[in-house]
Length: 283
Image (cartoon, rainbow, N blue to C red; front, top):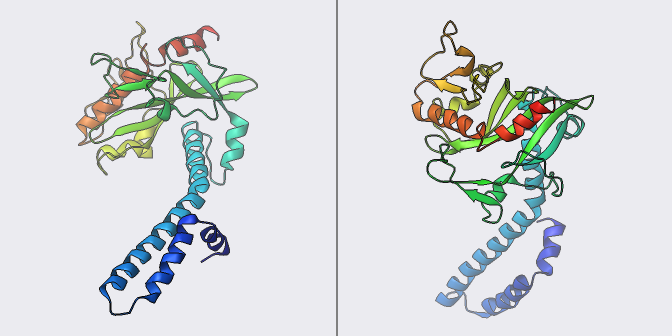
């Protein structure tokens, strides 16, 4: 046991009570039922304290690793992740975090973007919007009023826009990022960092080969409606409209439908369309 944990145990009131209880137990005869039960309870009590202390001690490390993994996924979808990349430095140098009011498409500057947790906000009635059945094509039930987006900039000009997207597949809510070129129309990449779809089927949403199929695809048709979607089978590039279609996931019809639905929702007026329109109008 480390000295740090020993010191915390000495200052723990529950452990001090346990220490007094231990003395009483030791005074019992070894063959008594009371002592057997007391010793078993004492062991459970000590183990519970050690586990609790370990959880508290490791919590900051877990939070840091979670944040680092999120930055890694953002750099990946932005095409900025290479072997040996210093993730924190690359993120700080090349990614700008911004908060967007989904309803208006305007930036929100009075909230700390770095500290904002969109998934947590989506669970807070004061910060979310409950969707109607007709609106909820992505099967998410609620959405946060404010979304966190990520801008890749060079010489103060936007190179790409990374949008958080999520929606239900077959077994799980799939959370990911969609990276668009600065035109707000052309897909650069897609990445799902949190999903529990069937391995080898719907779980192929994380397959680099399938993800590569998204590059260069278009989101909006000539009328401004969302046309980007998955098709059953393989896209026929000779047919008109192929630039809006991506190969479906073999043997994963419902997951493919879920991906199409979440793209349809988040790129529509219910999602980021107002924001993207303002990006386009500002050049």
